Length: 163
Length: 218
Image (cartoon, rainbow over all chains, first blue to last red; front, side, top):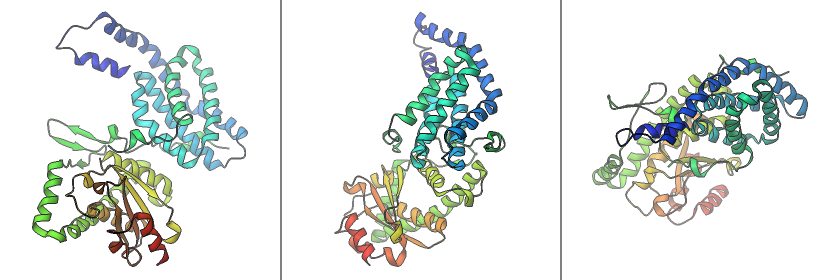
């Protein structure tokens, strides 16, 4: 959505904005206080949330090495930080460009899919509790983006082939 | 128990240092390109690369390959030093503590972001003492003068000195397939000079797999 707003500004010299284009802008502006609140809550509760996830993950995945679990938790911390910014800016492309191909390759290389599946389930649960539906709706699309990239596709090759 | 707070280093979780949009920064007014730590980047226009290729060909003929290879070695030496420095600064871990997978992962992203194509490591022959590097979409192959043999001498030089420094062994590098000759990617064999050198004469008449077979039986 953020890039959609950017393209609106490119038209400045050609014409005035149509009502529906202004609506896009006002929807974003209206949602901004809640987006900022979402961001603040994640920022302030980051360690809390992830520690709970980590504790449960260790119980659920007792057969995995601590090293593997720690690696996945670190990746999830990174993902959460990017998703939080993504939610603030309402910009999926930011999450896509900065994070996804990086995470996908790492998961592929270390084959941590089983751990990550459990981890993201726990993380979602925990976030829903902390944020509630009201704020979770801003974060969910970003998290879904990450989960889709991690669990439903083979590692990215086509879009990261260096061209 | 895992402590999440301990996983953070100075409250950071380092991610993708070479993420293209974060890494390359430009200052239009000054006409400068910089990386995210303020190091200057140099843009190589296609015309310049083509000019270097044809100038070298005119001036030095056959020796152009050796010149390019040696330039590559020099470039690779500095590139390795800078690459390691950047990684140590950003990840705040000594290189010795970084595992090979992470290191290669960064190298791949670095290669893409600098516009050199996509690089990958093939470890099939590692137990026989050879590393195979594949590169797709190389601008150095695309812009070179067509020849009857692989043309990426610059990259071969870069790879030989980069991996020599990484492994602490003096490694030579020979290219076996080339995009300029219609191959799907550029393949490079890395290994000790005396073991890789026989490949030099095989390149014109054998394919990559056959060359690997021969090298492994030497």
